[in-house]
Image 1 (cartoon, helix red, strand yellow):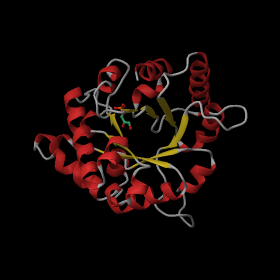
Image 2: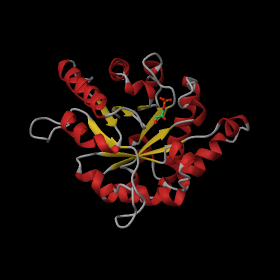
Image 3: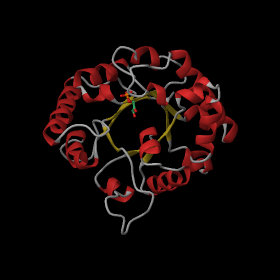
Image 4: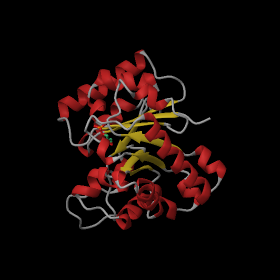
Length: 258
Ligand code: 13P
C-alpha cells in the first residue's frame, strides 16, 4: 500500500523572517494535529532556508523528521569552480532528504537539458537524496495530442536510463506546464489518465512490482479546494504544490486532505 506525499515547492518566494514563520508555524501545527498515518510531507524552500527548515523539520535530537526537506535543484557537477551552483552533496549535508529535478521552470528559463538532468539525478542518488523528477507537456503539445509522447520521451531520456535499484528511489511529479501557476488545474480524469500511463510505462520498462511501488505525484494549481478529489484517484499518490504551499492554512488543508 503506497503512502500519500504532499510536497511544497516554494520556488523563489519568502525572505528569512517569512520562511521562519511558515516553517515553525507548520511545525507547531503538525505537532498539535499530525497528518494522517501514511502521509509524508516534504517542504522544498530556497537554498538559504534549508538550515532553518532542518531545525523546524526535525526533533530536538535532529533525528526524527516531522516533515521531510527538499531542495529545488542541484548542480549537474560534483563540485569545483562553478560560481553560484549548489551541489547535491552540500544539500545532503544540510539534512535534506529530497531534491526536485527537472522542474519545467528550470527547463524553460535555465535551458536544462535531459543530459544535465540525468547527471543531476545520479548525483542526487549518489548523495542519498530522493530525486523528485518533474515532467510535463506544454499547452501546445497537449492541443496537438502529443502529450503522452512528450512525457514518455522526458522519462526515457532521464529516469528510465537508471537501473531498477536506482529508479526505485525516484519520485515522479507530472506537472502539465499549462496548469502551473495558472489556476487551471488538470481535471481529475486528465491527472489520473497521465499518471496511469506513466505507471504503465514503468511496468513495461521495469516490472509490475516496481510500478506498483512507484510514487507518482500531480502538480499544477493543486490547492486546498481540489486536493482531496485529485488525491482520491488511484494512481495519484499526492501532489507537488506551488502557490498554495506558501500559505500555512492552505498547505495544512491539503496535508489533511491527503
Ligand atoms: P502551482 O501549484 O503554483 O501551480 O505550482 C505547481 C508547481 O510548479 C510545483 O512545483
